[in-house]
Image (cartoon, rainbow, N blue to C red; front, side, top):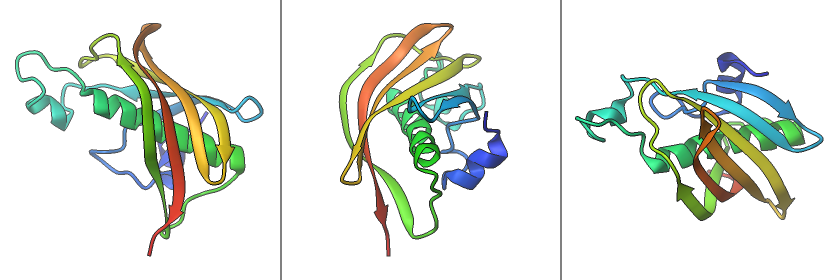
Length: 147
């Protein structure tokens, strides 16, 4: 388990773009992680998406899954980012959105590292609400030095 304080130590994201509230469990040997995003009515994106029927944008579900995947890679490799590094998306394949995510939902973020080769990480991810798949995809990310 990883609380918000440890997540803030590991990820450079901050409000309103930090989309992981807690890590529920990590299996370093199996390269799997499960995290939680509490979806609340006061999220800034709900003002315009959509005012009469608030729905979490799919791209933000994918971003939450990428943040959870970054946490998994850091835990698996025993590393932390410093100010000279960034963890970037390099690809999203097969993204599917199966159900809307609304205020009050608890989004459970599941990520499994498929491979890490030549600085490119590949993850099989899905986000669920009440054991129902909301989103699934294959994500590719990389860790890079910035100047």
